[in-house]
Length: 464
Ligand code: BGP
Image 1 (tube, rainbow, N blue to C red):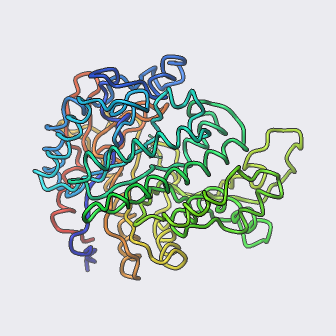
Image 2 (image 1 turned 90 degrees about the horizontal axis):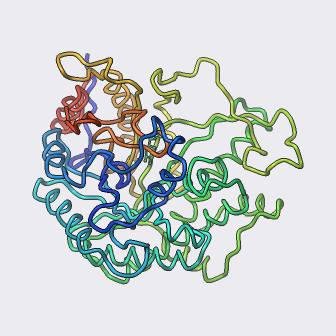
């Protein structure tokens, strides 16, 4: 007998994107440079096939056609990001009128098509001028981000009712200050921690502005990549390794953003290594008083860890990897086309944790998806036959359904992504879309998964 997986009424079916990854028009209509435009000019060879962010998927010019396609494949909601360097070139000062027109057009077009807009304020795209005065290490940049956020609420808050302060804020801290995959490309754990703290603070500052404006029916949240940390075994050393990974990579944002407080264990750990960030009592007060209304959860793959086998070199560079080693679990299921583990139950484990330890705050899956290299090889009759992606989505939806049945307060599911898009350093290597994009002609073609997604949304679920 087929089992039915029906989702609660009004469930959000949609997808997520970000400005740098889809808009293109990177130097058009007065847009300023962000870190990606700048870094690409410095080191084009670090980007897959040398493809930069200038054109990407050309959403800037094709948003009407794209929103039509969203409608066609059943979207009732869509997350995009506003580009700070487009709206306020240089990060501070005059608002760019052309950018206001563009985002107004996108928002209005979405609403006319009954697609709820969810706007992210920051998706990895710091204006370069702001990065050059210290990025989120700098208090001045926090102030400028706050003003940018306020400008967005004032300009678009009459129609956008769902806001996100940051997408995966730990990623620019890790990428830019620890693991060399974002600009400014340095390795300094202490700075990374300061950037993490300051981003939490910046998010709280934006929330505080949002509250002052009393936007009717408006809610503001944050999107976190909550990667469950699974230990190799129940041995106390493995459990400890997993606990530290969880503190550093999940709870460093989840706790202050949802509960308004840092976990004591994290504070003790950082203190014992003399790595506490610089902060004031007022900062902590602001964080406490400005927690999120809802939470976006991005989930791609779990983190598996084991106790350190060799003590780290005391003279080596101090990073989180001092505390644990990656555990390559025998028999783990891999995405054969991308190199990431597929573990569907992870989505359930995250949500149960949110239910039990974070007041069952309202949440939604803000990203989940399967990147595939070389998808052209699956074309038949002009359509990419991405059954693997349909299976991936179904696998995760089954666990999501179970979490909801068990009381988790989840409002929707957004796939990464609506269409193939340019990714940070990876450019067009991994394709994620329900709609494929030919990057030479910019032609869009709905994939098999897109047609399947349409049925999913129409039926508010699926059966199997
Ligand atoms: C998430 C980001 C997205 C997207 C995705 C896929 O972490 O929020 O912006 O890029 O990862 O990653 P990638 O494109 O590197 O495969």
